[in-house]
Length: 323
Image (cartoon, rainbow, N blue to C red; front, side):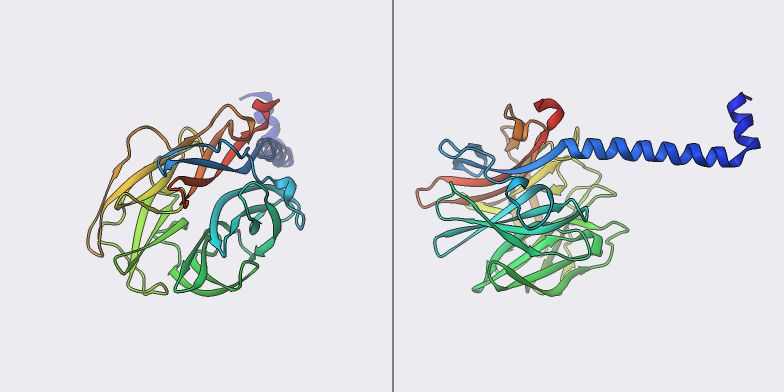
């Protein structure tokens, strides 16, 4: 037995002190690493939602934590845009550094080039992110990720874009002992479908309902993926293109938020589901510019009047690589 082991046996308090010091050191290392990893939001463009590159006329990032004026923001991420009356409204996660909790902020633009930050539009006691906004029957809705609440929740705009009200819980509880992350919804052939990710087991779950507010039941083909950290986690809005639906998946390998892939949904009914991977590599990934030198993980793609596509994306910067 070593001298240190004998000492720890004789003086239990020393063991406790060393344990506390070790934990504090690990926490400091973790915080230093987190402070060096910063998300921001950019704009991509292309002929279709699968072929996207940095916008040739608009430099990225278009929005960073520096533009957030009403909270102490560490980063902005998970962009989702909705257009109304010719104006672009962008919703995104704001990581409130004071609370160490995600809140939902918004910005707006008339031309995609100049963005004006509005305010935090939704916050809860629990963490919020991934503000999937969509329109249904003239109303604006949002399904943010709120896994800390152990549920998937629906919100409706009472005064768009700045006021949102809780409507109902779509999926209740901890699903199969794991909270559900990044819920992504789509309406297809008169039916609603909801994808979400179970982090503990790396599964992609699929739910369906005849109505937006439910009842929601797990689809017979769910889970779509099991034990897969590369293709299971939703990575943006489900889009229609060339007669098919496409979903994006964020890759957790070799690290969280490294890239995003696309899958073409070839069959989607209340009873059946099938998809196939799109070839050609990831849709977005880390690049040479500092703002996304460590990864990208969310794609919100929209078709424009000229037939081209734009996509709001987020990029991860490792400041150690940038310096």
